[in-house]
Image (cartoon, rainbow, N blue to C red):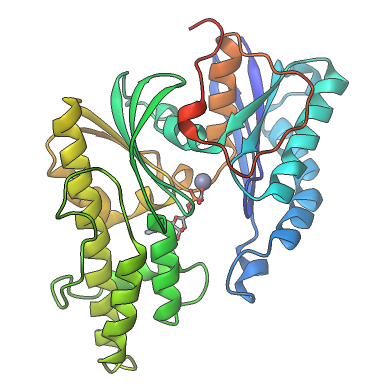
Length: 338
Ligand code: KG4
Ligand code: ZN
């Protein structure tokens, strides 16, 4: 049964994992660069690339040791080919392609968002095709009609900031340390979500697109009228902001489910770790599928799994190193055997 090494280096996490078709996930290691970027208040691309270079090979050794395997036991190498930071992607792409070349096995370039989309398949309770997917990360907010592996119709997307980006930027406005999203969510749990009414952009008109940049501006204006040194006020603003995002995502999911008649909803990407979002989506009354919390944010396991699935279904890539900063999910096609 095929064993695939997965390499994720699209942003600020070096993720390495091994997925085996018979035994499932054999190893998953993550090195996060959060502390390194924290003093700059955001990801510094050049530092991210250099740090991937430092950690990628030791993590591959750790994953092989955990899985009690050698390089010769691998059937293919999967790596994130895009979208993401070009220099960061280049590290994973070069290591992935070089390893595959040296071992004379196939390399599979994986779309990062397809990795997120497939992450719930690593759990015992798996969705079945077709389903609706809400992908909410730091770079993307997408509603996707998933007909099969590689057959994706994007029904809606953000016209400006992604949901995670809105969390991060609003966290900065509230003087929360980087990375802001999870810290804002933790603060929101202490506040009243009804304290302030914030806009739910694009919810009052038809369509499935999202817009979150106006919400961030509304928070900025609101904070200018409040005493933000009061901890309770800050928590109330965080809770009200989170409610506006969660309500918006809920409304669009409800609309998309009605429009498509789909009865399963997959929610993935960093923001899918958000407890308020998870709780609210339960009231949609459809079957919900989430990755486990550590596989909501970037990780190697989702890339190993997506690569294994495509490899198993006949996908073979040439030995070309071609990282892509931008890569529309809808341009993907199914692997050869599907
Ligand atoms: O999927 P991911 O790790 O990276 C990208 O592909 O972008 O998502 C990271 C994003 C960040 O914007 C982060 O603030 C957000 O996910 N995030 C959260 C939570 N955990 C991570 N946002 C809200 N609530 C959370 N609990
Ligand atoms: Zn991601």
